[in-house]
Length: 261
Figure 1: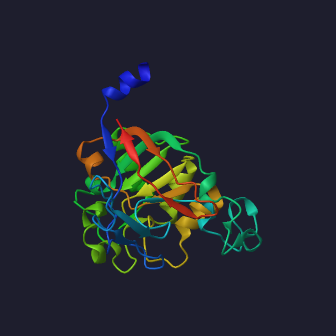
Figure 2: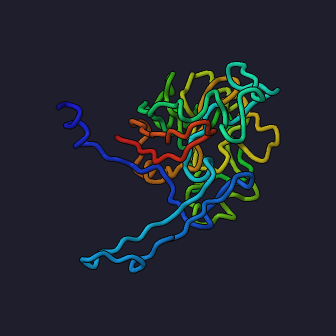
Figure 3: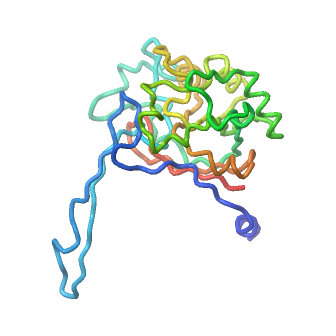
């Protein structure tokens, strides 16, 4: 088939960060926990066979993940105007716009390499990504952001993943403020993501970018990506593939996204 022929000549880039005990996580979300709960030799079969197994626990917003539209509300209302208070429960989660309603994502992806355009390995912690930065990176990459795209912003912060304190930086980091988010929403993107813990420029208690994208425009946010190999290969346009877990009622899901180019 033509599809398989094209895929066989393409390269796959893994855009996910690894999970490990002590890994970075946003301070208001629970950490990733792991334990080997059955070691080899605890139970042994007649042929000398044995199996090990483990247990994990984590928040849905920990590691490389995508936000459901129900992750944020403003004035008590979700995207589309639903009253959050009437649509949520501790046991059942959100009954509207939860992550299990998000289909598998296969869309055109665009990388805007802000760090490279700025001439640095990684943006400073207080760097605001403005509409001019986005437009300049778009031109430098030779791409145009189109309706329905998944747009990924590289800040260079993926290189700090193994240094959790620096990566989280007391919930501070580079990213777009409201003007940058409006640049993205004006182009009708499906999702916007970055290699930082909070996507938008932090700290900002009002979280205006999350409100603007999720609540006002129905645009998903993807966080904690690893964009280094993609950027290193100079790839600016690709097929973005990610499958959120079908977690009923959840406000986000871990994903293992890939770029095919």
